[in-house]
Amino acid sequence: MKNLLYKELKLVIPPATYLFALLPALLLIPAYPYFVGVSYFFFIIQITFATARANKDHEFTSMLPIPRRQIVLAKHLNVAFVELLTILVAIPFALISSLIINPNGNIVGMDANFAFFGLTLIAYSVFNLAFFPAYFKTGYKMGVPLLIGIAVYLITICFFELVINLVPALKSTLDGLNPQTFIYQFIVLVAGIVIYVGSMFVSYKISTKKFEKVSL
Amino acid sequence: MLIVENLSKEYPLFKLNNISFQLPKGYIMGFIGMNGAGKTTTLKSMLNLVKPDSGTVTILGKDVADSEVEIKQEIGFMLGEADYYSKSKVKKIANVYKRFFKEWDEKAYQNYLTRFGVDESKMISELSSGMRVKLAIAFALSHKAKLLIFDEPTSGLDPIARDEMLDLFHEIVEDGEKSIIFSTHITSDLDKCADFIIFIRNGELIANTSKDDLIADHILVAGKKSDLTDELKNRLIGFKLNAFGFIGLMHKNNMLDTEKLQTEIPNLEDIMIYYNKEEQK
Image (cartoon, rainbow over all chains, first blue to last red; front, side, top):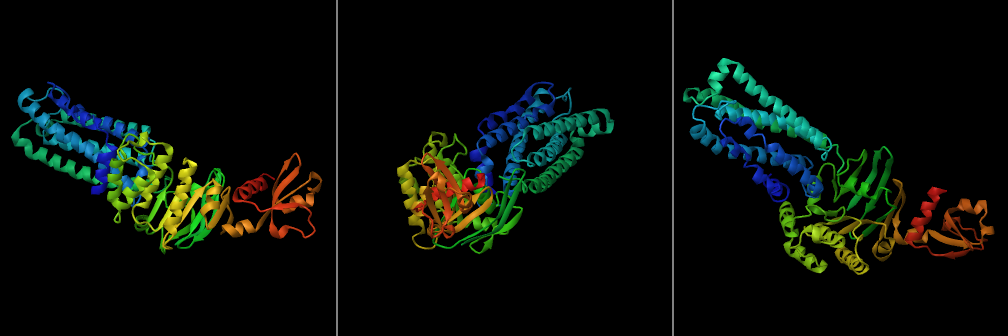
């Protein structure tokens, strides 16, 4: 797994990734929907997968002494790296935004609290589950899989924003920066982490099954 | 060393049909056929890159379907020139590639780069097509592989480089422990170095024999147009008409003692060409 991640970092993930990964800095804009700030990961995925296809990445990986399922694993590691990097970069900007720029809370959408990052992980999970199995049906066609992934991701974050705004019990516990509600928000974060890991595992299993039938 | 049994793979417009052959230790096998005959499909099916519909491939006593990873540590293969990550430097790609092999031999790798004249500090896109072929071969040869599988290893190489490559193949099998199977449509390569030949046409195995036997079993015949009777046409594998008459290929045992035709020993190219004519007949 270490070697595969090394390969993705050295040969596959383009340098522009690190520039795009800074986009959660948009969280510093006063009254900015935070979910938008963590949504730029799919630009990176689009660039990475398109570049990988042009660079015959699967062809190279298939020359290595690894089982075919590890080609699928390499791409899951790649996307996990991009998504988790987005969250890691977003955390300090979310803190600055919450403590200095919007101390009274974000007026458009959720505050960047524990629950926000938990729900972001769940939305990423939905994206991964939609994108990967569709992509690994061929291993090279990525337009439609990406569109499906982005569509379900956007629906998910809109759903979260709506539900939290419309259900008072959720609004009072999961939104805001009140330390007394942190315990509920923390539960959502833990749930997000569990769902994210689970979704990667399920996506990997389904994608592997599909990719086994593909001719390289 | 390598046993392929009843390998089949069906596509909508092409079928690889029951391909079987064996390659013993210490020999070079040439794999010939026209473009689209199924050479690459066969090689890819052997490596599990294309899932065969049926058949088994055994390499070094292990079934490829069951022990793919283990086998890939012990074989070297190149299925075309190294044309991946075109804007990355050779050294960067090699640094990733070598990490995956338990028996990576850095000294051998550096020797091959020097021998082939490949500059590690260049990007892939800066290498000529021939250099990329050589790089792919250097990759395949540098982890102490016992069986080497090459798809068109001489294509894109100039005549001198081709000759040197064939000399290298001889050197590799010299110790009697390693074997090479390589596909080509440049049959003169095989005239120079192959011990065994497999010949496929349109997914069907036409010949699987030693090179010497394949040539000894066939004969080129030439005569006037008036000599080309229907009976003779039936005995010929394929023939071509020209201004003076005809030239055709036949199995030696189809030759009659009373035949008054000019004869000549065919080379592999003749055999390929006239078998193709048979298909067109």
